[in-house]
Image (cartoon, rainbow, N blue to C red; front, side, top):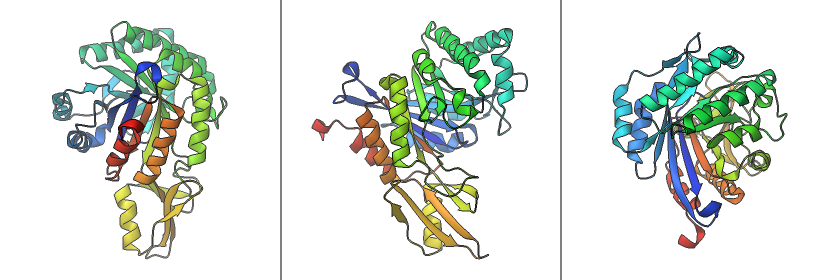
Amino acid sequence: MLLVCELLVLTLLRDGGARAAVQPLTIASLPYWNLAGGTSTVEAHESQVTEASPWLYGLDAQGRLVSQSRRADDLARLRATGMAITPTIANVTEGRWHPQIVQTILHDPAATARHISDIVGLVVQGDFSGVDIDYEELRSTDRAAFTAFITRLADALHSNGKRLSVDVFAKTTDEGYDERNRAQDYAALGRAVDQVRLMAYDYHWQTSAPGPIAPEGWVRDVLTYATSQIPRSKIVLGVPMYGYDWVGHNAVPVTWVQAYGRSREFGVPVEWDGFSESPHFSYTDAAGARHEVWFENAYSASIKFTQARLFGIGGVYLWLFGTEDDLVWSKLDTYWTPAEAR
């Protein structure tokens, strides 16, 4: 998961999953370095946000939980809204992913038991509704141990009346594209947890060739596979709200505001790629370097909202990069309102 401000928008289905009766539940996930800004976004859209996942915790070199935010006032502001809070724990230390720390925990029974106890203690003592686990860059050899850990953690949390969500990389087969995909057993994880957060973005990434972040056809294929493995009501589709500005195979992340700002600055129109259903444009900077920008806006997001509804999954989450397209909120209202109520 990119280290950016994300907003999760989860729509839960009532009446045994009947698609005609949807009740929006919006989860805001806020990274520790932008907790103040993310909290302000939640407050501004409090009527649409019902749950917050502040990215507050990481792991130290010994695998113990460590706080990644010293802004207790922001957590207090979130609590003041009265919404449920499910913090995210990621295997990030000082801004970098460290899979080896998680691997040590997974393959040492004593360390696994201690880690589960630490997490349950954090959730119960912190009076959180649950927790979100985002452990990335694992290998296929970690698959069984990761599944066992998540299953035991889910059981321990459930016995305390708490919930568990897990973040997974998008794939269209069990093998997926690389070791990270093979480390995650969709079916087994889906049986254990309350929510599977599907990271259906970064089809093109910072060091790839330029291209769409989450092309429509790929997202559809990802959903087709996911729904064959995981109960639909547990699946939450990640919808990106950011982009990349490439020069060759090197890119910098951009917000929606930054993307449109560069389009205006260099006097080039934003074009629409009908195949991927994504906005993009190219420009040449003052040094003569050719740039290619692909990003997401409310219109590309709305197409993914429609896919999520058609697949009958639990909902969607918006993975924000700080400043989302203002129209996203109205698109959410439109696409997650039952047809007969429109």
